[in-house]
Length: 324
Image 1 (tube, rainbow, N blue to C red):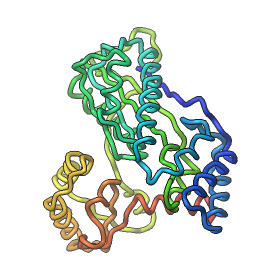
Image 2: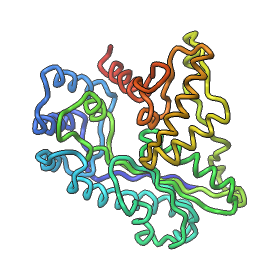
Image 3: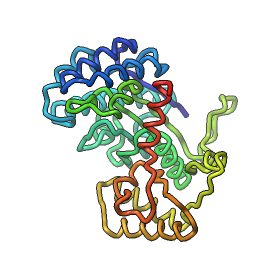
Image 4: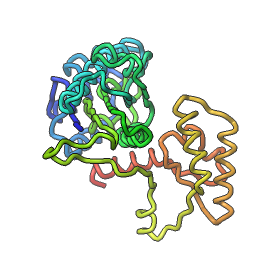
């Protein structure tokens, strides 16, 4: 029915952000000469002109003397700013849809750049005037794919409840995750790419027909996740995927356990059995294609050598950014 975004008021050109990040990194222990040269190349080649930050650029140095990322003052600021920015985006999407806040039946919120308990969705109920019995689904840990995963879950819900209305909100404040201890390669890449912002979409089930003469709106037809098959085939690499039952169990482990910080020996053993079966079919390595899977599996406990897709993609992005 409607999709809207919201951005913080502070907006800076890439070269100014590069200087600010270097200052924060220096306060965190300093960049090595090779890192500083790489930082300049990353920011210059990222094809980013400007980005929004939730705080004025000068305030980030104030966090530099804190002992570690995720300490209370930073996370408290995340909760405050993410709630306000999320409210703006979702309120705008509701206004665009013509729905009253109390008409929503489900609210999904995705975010990974801070932790809030109660979660952001709960904090938005009184601010937006949502029903106290609204269904809520906070999603944490999916990183860059969270928006797409959230749309898939919203679609699943509306298939089951075609007479309901649902909203998805994604809000990230990447600038609050700037390093305050040792600067890593991943920090350099992320600092050159990501800004702060929020986006929201309001959707309805198929029981709600569009008004006569209304513009045709986008629809979610189906959802499915496919990992790398076309890319692998193009390079003459054969691949084997878990079978349907194995995929369903692995998905359950990810959604019900790993995303909740639950790591069971049984889950490790199940993955080992699946990987061992694929090894018996002639596989030489296993791609850990979900962001959460490396929390459970690695070279030390896998029957096959592992390929961590998150690390591989980050390294590829780095090579591309520096022109190698």
